[in-house]
Length: 479
Image (cartoon, rainbow, N blue to C red; front, side):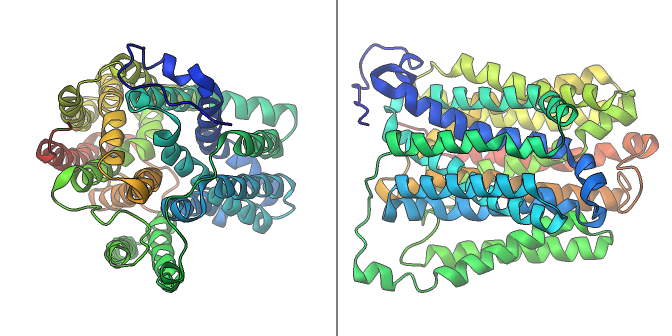
C-alpha cells in the first residue's frame, strides 16, 4: 500500500490528514499498536489477584508485571537501529508474532513459569510494536499532522485508563483471567495483516560487510543494558533499604555506562547526540526522562493515597487517577492545531512547569488532607503532559535525519519506560527513608505516614521535575 504525501503547506486541518489519502489504515495500526500496550498494562494489573489464586507463586507476582516492562524496554531500545537496517515490515511481523505467541502462552499457562515466559514474549513484542509506531510517524504522515497523531495516541491511553479495569472485570467474571490474554489473539492477527498491507519495507542503511562487522559488540551492549534494567526493576522486590539503594545506584550507573558505550559503537541503538547537555535532541531527552522519573511516585502511590486518605474504593481511586489521562487527552487535542514552532517550544516549557507545580501541590494535598487539591494536581499533571508531550516528541524526532531519526523515534517509548522504572525505584527508596511506605509492610502506606512524611517525597519529585523545566528552557527554539 502506498500512502501519498500531501503537501504540508496545504490549508488542511491536521486532523483530516490522519485519514485522507489512505492514511486511515496507518492511523488504525497506530491505534491498535499503542492501544494493545496500554490496555495490557491496565488489564494485567487488574487480574493479578486472580492469577495468584489460580497459579500460586505470590512471592514472584512482581515479575508478572516487571518482565513485560523489561522486555518492552529492551526490544524498544534496539528497534530504531534494526529498522534502519532491516526495514519496518519484517520487524513488525516478528513483533506481532512474539506478541501473539506470548499472549497464547500466558493464557494457556498451567504454571507461573509459563506465564512469566509468556509475559516476557508479550513485552518484547509490544515494546517493538510501540517503538515501530513512533518511527513510522514521520514515514506515513506529513509533518504538520504530527501533533494530531500524538493527540490521537493520548486518547488511546485515556480510553484504556477508563475502560481497562471494567474490561478486566467483565472478562474475568464471564470466563477467567485467561480471557484477558486470549483477547489479544485477534488483535495480534489484525496487526499482522496490517503490517503486510500498510508498513513500508524500505530501509535507510545498506547492510555492507563493514557495518555488519562493526556490530560484533551488539550482544555485549544489549547484555549490559539488560542487567541495568533488571537491577532497576528488581528494586520493587527488595525490602532492605540498603539493598534498594545499592540496586538503584548500580543499576543507574550501568544504564549510563551502557548508553555511553553504545554511542561509541559503529551501529548504536540510540542517537549519538542523546543526553547531551545542548541541542534539541540531547536536552529534549533529558526533559522526557526527568518528567517520567518525577511522575512515577504518583503512579505508584496515587491509588493507595486515594484509598487511605479519603476512603475511596479501588475503582473510585483508579478513576480518580484516570483524571490525569483524561486531562492529558483533552489538552492534547486543544493544542494539536498549533503549528507555530515557537509556540510549540513555549508549550513544552509551560508543560514542564505545570507538571512541577502538580508535584508541589500533591505535597500540599497530603499535608492538608484535601481531596479537592489532590484532584486539581491530577488535572494539572495531565494538562502539563497534554500541552508538552506531543511537541517534545516532535522536536526530538525531527532533530535528526535518516537512520538517526529512526533511533530517536524508536527510543521514545523505552526512554519513558526507563524513566518510570527509575522513578518508581527512587520513589520506593525515598518512601522507605522517610517512612512514607515501609518496605515489606502489609499496607503500602498508612494514614499517619501519608500525612506526615508523604509531602517530603513529592517535594523531592517536584525538584526533579523542576530540573526538567530548567532543561526545557535551555532547549533551542524549534524552527
